[in-house]
Image (cartoon, rainbow, N blue to C red; front, side, top):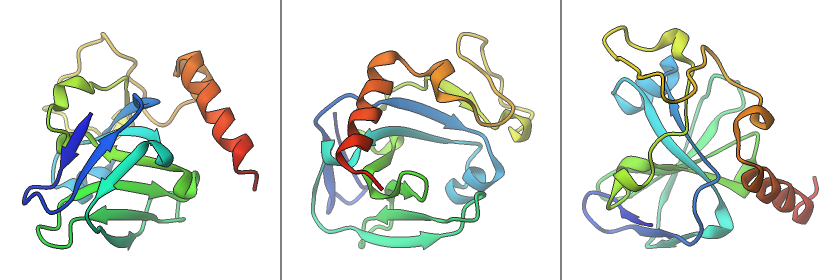
Length: 155
């Protein structure tokens, strides 16, 4: 999958399929995106090839640990984030920056306790009021990839 910012100064390629894609309806994501939710595809950072320089912006997060948002220094579009829990080992790629966002639909809706009331969710995907236990929702192949990543980078 390929993606880029609006002006094209920064582009990227995902060299593996994402582990899992969140559609997050928390108020933090609403504020950061200026929309009703954020759609983030989680992938090991080693499988994210970036062309061009990004500007890293540190912002607060609901966990209190913050996040690093990689933005285009020209058009300021957010391309991906690194959250404190996974550090720089994982990237949360903004699906809307993919050249074909339809190739990366959400796997789950999270933090729906604060979703906008006018957003209707079809019950074809898991809909959770808060976060979730990944073992209950992630495919086994994604769980295995995560374990392999953590084994390569012990804390």
